[in-house]
Image 1 (cartoon, rainbow, N blue to C red):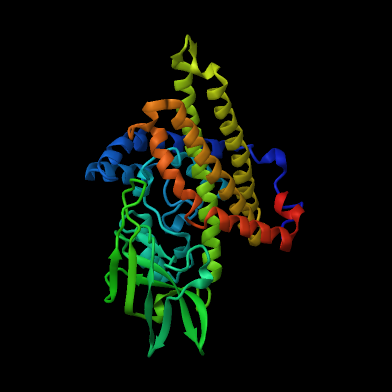
Image 2 (cartoon, rainbow, N blue to C red; image 1 turned 180 degrees about the vertical axis):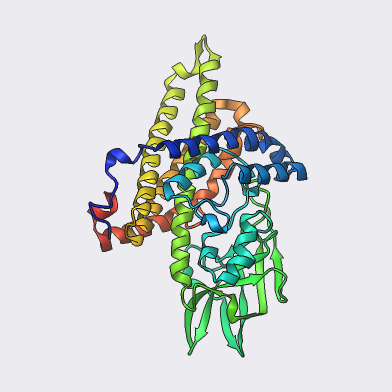
Length: 400
């Protein structure tokens, strides 16, 4: 439970320590020097970059200790606090085309694995040797995981898994799939996560559709046809999938809020500079309210959203009620994803015809930020979560 003793004081939320400021600056420098110069090249090549660029991203992110985030240092992460992780995610959010996806990473779920699972899946991921892919969504079960129909049926000493997963990010390059399935025990379904090697018999890529953004990896549809796995494929225990997944959603949603904040900051920096330099009708265009007011509105948005995100991160570090963190992460994602979309549209308009060119940062963010209102739970789902939290935990706890 959150108490006055472990809740950060309002004045502390934006007060960063010397080590936090150093990490923030290090991440900003990496984003600006290593990642940003590769954006347009990635855009013009369908999201792909040459091998030497990929090698540089991996090596530099490891050398600068910017990958692995919240994962423990002994596993190859950095044992960051949630605030430190939020600050880095903000800086990575400044970059289009998901260039940061080439940094070594692994989903938080893998930290809950057995020693053997950590050795096989987590450590190689954090070294940048493999990718994992989270397979949750289905054709008729998106933001509501209760509709999942993928099953795992006991078969001797193992399990037989059948089902089809949609929008499996990294699914075209993953070495392992983290699959949510209903394990049937005594006729009753128990939400359980399974780790399934990508080369296991019975896995089929049904479709790998193109999407609005130009990212390096796809989001294919994966079908599991009588896939056989052992008990050692279960992560988090039988029936433990729902809890792990809620923790994953909380983290992912807060990360989206952070990256949206970084995107808005970059957009405001570049668009404001352009509006100061550009003249029309004998005046700088920033002197026209039709230009300056939209910029001001987005500046207010990012300042408010960043405060909410950092406050949520500090609550998580203070050991607050996970259900409260879940609600506040949904609030942060909802607010920042909606605000970022408005910001990108405003900035594109201010750039005029130049803003409609793919070489322009506003055009790329205009396309890319749209998905943040959809994945890891749509804006509508976030509103439902927040409303239910108001009912169950009370208005004061949710908004304070």
